[in-house]
Length: 276
Image (cartoon, rainbow, N blue to C red; front, side, top):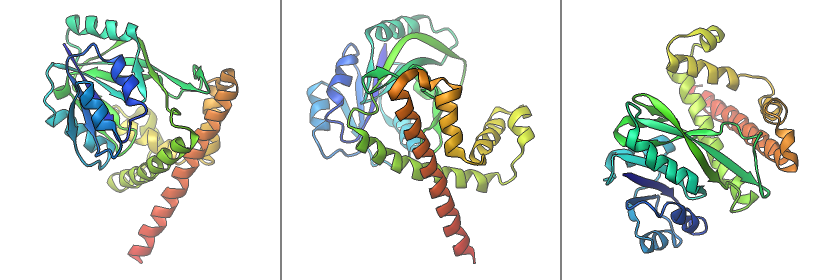
């Protein structure tokens, strides 16, 4: 009753264990961005159906997949190659879709692991909308896309385990270097579409999409934003309780935030020179 969607790009290391965790499904769709390693071979040997498309940005890529991939079942579970579905979650979601009612999507709790432990406290947001009816779901933003369901959303028990450092710190930094460029572009694009920022709208605007824009813009305008990010994760969210892993992760996230700040400044300066 549930199809599986896996996005890949050179995932020969992580894909095998991901596929094992969803092997209960008879419709596994691997949506690949022209991998140059053994990703496709591994997927096909596991019986998955492979669709290939050149990656442009996260929202456009994911939206294209939902609109063009022929899923066998009315429900889809989206999972990345460095994630694993626990047996409990696999059982729960299969039971959930049998009595979904009016819900068109469900959030699941993800556990991020680093240095061999679960980042129980420092993780920014543990809930993600991963189980949904594909025609009722869409994504927005160039990177770290926002999931928008056209209907009621529920929540299911069980964990989705995530191993973002499975390929090492270097790969994590390389990936987030790319992400930071998209984030900077997104910030500039948002300001072009809606140049008037209001603190009042960030808290009191009734329209959710407008309120969300001004809340994000408020965060983007904070002084010493990388330091604020560190304090939020390590102090406000009790990341210090995660020990060395929590400290290291908070520092890495602050570095990522600083990369976004620098690239936003750089892109704005380039735009200004073009208009002069």
